[in-house]
Length: 216
Image (cartoon, rainbow, N blue to C red):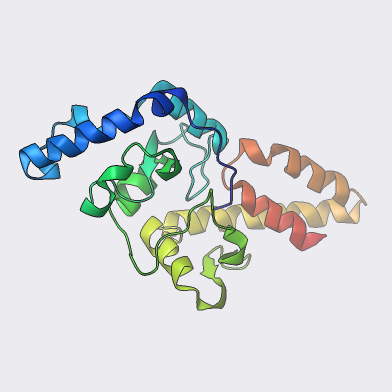
């Protein structure tokens, strides 16, 4: 996970979110429960300009695991504050609540998980590096100073699931071996520069930032 800058609100939300929210709330009151409300009232955030803006905001990476979305899994518009919880119905079309996420993180881990006392970190608001650190030996994320919000984030998003940890460790080993080879030839700067240029086209770009910082 890494911090990103939130882009301006897409036109579809700017023009319609207030009306969509009222229609949703009215329908929830009419039906009695959120579960009985038709999807047509719940999913109006699925607009092309919303998807395109979120993809650009995260540079096509998942907001949680940082994998490239679209190569091995579908992209999902993620509600940081779960839209299915009564406390957050009104945020279904709120721009500040929407993020870009891979299918695995969205449907297998985050889902409707929420800790009201120690909520998950927001990549567009929180300085992630003050809460989380990546262990370059284990490939696991760790909370800084036993921070409870960091712990919630790791647990709710599956950031340390086995497949991700193994993938990170493979890249760590590959990078460090390559660096040592180039260091012997005096080309370590060119090696790091190449990785720095390619990182946004690869999974886990912040991992390479940490590795480049580590070897310098």
